[in-house]
Structure formats: C-alpha cells, structure tokens
Image (tube, rainbow, N blue to C red; front, side, top):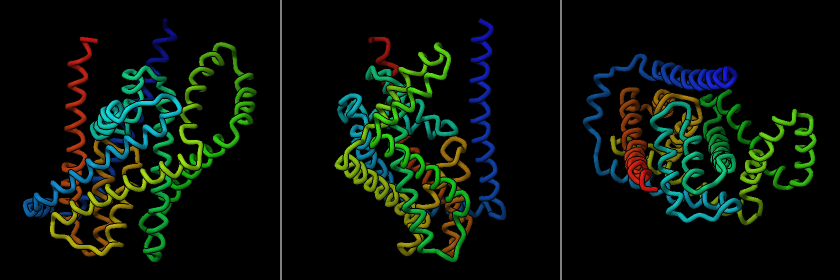
Length: 332
C-alpha cells in the first residue's frame, strides 16, 4: 500500500511539473508579446472587427473537423472499424480539453474517451493519435521549409523550428521503418523485453502489442496517400480560417504573408504551453504580422479574436458533447 501511494504521488508530481512548465512557457511568451504594446489601443482595435469574417472563419475551421475525423477513422481501421458519428465526439472533446487544460492534455483524454466508449485499448488509440500528430508534424515541416525558402534573409524560426522538425521526421521515419519491417522489429522488441523482470514484462507486453498495432494504422501506399490528402485539406482549411480572422480587422497581406502567419501560429501550438496556447499564440501573430508593418497592438487583437472565434467555437461544441455524455452515463 505505501508503494502504491508513493507511485501515485510520483505521477501527480510529474503531471504538476509538466503543467507548471506549460504555464511558465505561456507567461514568458505573453511577456514577449505585450511588452512595449499599448493595451488600450489593442482594446480599441478589437472594436473594429467585422463579424461576418469571423463567422466565416469559425465555419471554415469547424469544417476541418469532419476531415480530421475521416483521417482518424482511416488510422484506427486496423484496430476497429468505426463510423464517422462514433468518432466525431471524441475528436471535438479532445480538442476542447486541449484548449482548456495546459500541455495538450486533450490527446490523452481523447484516447481514454474513445477507449471507454468503443471498448478499445487506450494504448492502441493513443498510438493512432501519435500517427495523426506525426502526419501533422510532417505538414508543419513542409510549411517551415516553405517559410525558409520565401524568407531566406529572416530568422523567424531558428532552433525551435529545427528541433520540432527533427522530432517529427524521426517519428515518421520510425513509424515507416516499423511498418516495413514488422517481423524483424518484433524480434528485436521481444529480445529487449526478455531482459526485463517477469512482472514488468507481462505488464508491458499487452500494452505494447496494442500500441504497435495502432502504429501500423497506415501500412499501404494507398493509405498514406489518403491520409496525406486529408492532412493537406485540414491544413488548408485551418490556414483559410486564420486568414479570415486577419481579414476581419481590415488587414491585407500578400499570399506569402498568410503563409508566414500560419506557419508561426502552427509552430506555436506545438509548444507545451498553458490553456488555449495563450502566449505562444499571441507572440506568433506579433512576430509574423510585424514583418508586414502591422502594429503590435493590432496583432495582439487579432490573436485574441482568433482564439475566441476558432478555439472557442470548438470548445463550445466539445463542452456540449461532454455534458451530453455525462447525462447519458447513468443510464448505461
């Protein structure tokens, strides 16, 4: 019993440290974004927003979620064939938790949520989310490369972009290698597990088998192409939503400008930050829009409205679905 309490305390401490790190990261980037800014001017700029553009931005952003769900269903197909309707709620709920809690806790909750509802292994579902995030990461690498090409004289991204790109490329290479060499990989894994104590080996074997099966969610050329199409469409819709929010303040940019804004905003969401990506999200708008002579005050106003219109619309749907789930639970 004391041992269990100690382990639970250790997990709680790790969770607390991780979330605290996210809040500290947010605080640091909030400082970078608002320093030398006239916040009263930002409030004045907020009053100039054109609601029609915001409605369009929210609708475009929400339209990306059925596409995300189709991609996730494709990845999960090797574990269990699920309908679009069965997966929409976990997707919305997962993104909502990401927006409300720090350090992307929604990914873990989404795995738990679907695992409980569909009677699936949480490890297997978590693996499918790893594949999903790797696909997004590869798109981010492509966008970062495009920014380097379009803005060779600038140093917007630096070491952060390089580190993030290497992580996603390594994940993608590992998933591809495992998919192409399943038998050989399993022999290596089995030898490694054989070196562990029996109790630990038994604990890991079942969980690892589900996880590895989930990693192989896409194992054919056709599957990779289909997932790539879904991922590209999601990113195009997200970029259009950001562009519409920017346009709602009467800000006009060349196409390369919107590419830069979206690239930095997308990169900002990969950082372990506080709820709603507060801080990195603001700084991404300030830096990218500042390149095109948009004031810091206007950039801050755009970033706040983007969070409210895009992340807020998803969160409202996710909260409604969570409440519906809670009301339905006693009758099960």
